[in-house]
Length: 163
Image (spheres, rainbow, N blue to C red):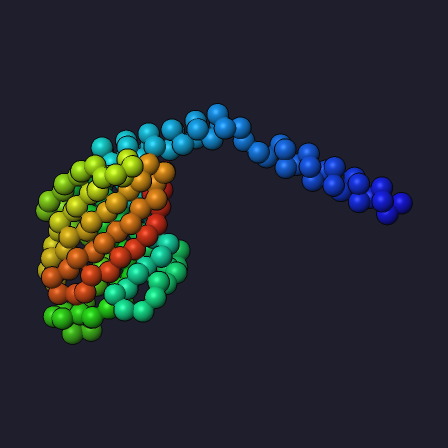
């Protein structure tokens, strides 16, 4: 009896695994569709990157809680990012940090290796000037380097999300 139950469980598992596997053609089609979504979002300057990891200048990498993101909407940059590092000249209490919405001052896009797109967005608010250097791959994986006039550089990694 025990052998029959184990055999049935193994057979059910095999059927489930075979049914959930995608063929090479399906995977290639998904990759192409995702690359088109990424390309469209970048061309329209309307994209959002959900941040998963942060890399402060000192110490190791840290996981980031769900909800932190960087968003570009046409001519606006919406930065909702955590910050750990040295601040050279900030308002009392720490100021806004990397949590602000500001108009895009400069926007440059170039191609990197292996289909990577490099986007440099310059902006400023009442506290500081920023340069966001964003590297986006065809699969939506992204890295963000934030260079600030009054704070140390910090990096993030995440992935593009689509509504």
